[in-house]
Image (cartoon, rainbow, N blue to C red; front, side, top):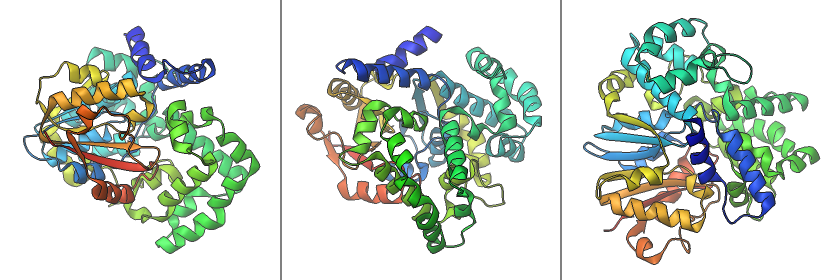
Length: 405
């Protein structure tokens, strides 16, 4: 199983036509990507559901990542959500959440386990209420030990959102902020958008002008912790210095949305969710959605697979909605056309595809073969609106396509 997982990730990440030095960077990222990367997915599920207009009877395919969005889509009442991922840690996390929703006695226990995720009792809760209902592969993952020698399930006694590649990256960013005598949590104590912006401009923005920060972010490996592979680094930077791009994305996160309605800001500036009553949470973690999650959890199918392979094994005309996250930023033209050939074959009438890109424009024009491109309609105005309102703020573009038949 480990060998298969390694091959799946290497095939997706390592560019076949890259130069030797670039291939070495790709392999380094692939190695980093084999562990837990995202304890929380960094795409806004509310924006996804608005753009896709998921509804009853629909079949949705998405990339699992931290599984927050795959679970949240159930609130829109689709017939089925199939979540695929190259990373076995992400699949294990998704299956852990599924087992918890099915078997924990109530919402408060579920919230303590997955929203607060740092109570010592969670180890016993896992052992008695969740583990007996897990598949063997997922249970093996959570009960095996990480590089520190601790069982992975202990992440939920020490704060799962401080773990993994992204959690470590955010932790390092907080340490760097302390070095520059910056309190990132000040953003979370702001009471207005104007106050949020004042804090950003006075304290956060100047950091990106520091010589060390500009030098560090000029190296693709420095952003591995964000889950950004070398191929995507180039798309994200474009013709600008990476420090300039990152400053602009952080500005949107810190300034464009009230922090009392943006759980992404809490993860970035507070390293966890706000614990007060009524605090912002992903839809699947909200108290009001708990009955719905229990009723519909059987509609979520979590798979360790490449999405092209999954679609190739699916029937023609079998899917209504596709969520590709930013995976296409990793792809060369051959891989891109293989993916869209399978999407087009499996799409039902008026199917929709939503994806994100590191750069602002859609990456399909000029790369997708004409016989595929002409069958899809790009909703440019709607895409621009979704991009502006995506609270995660880290992507240049959210793009929506509809199947024209």
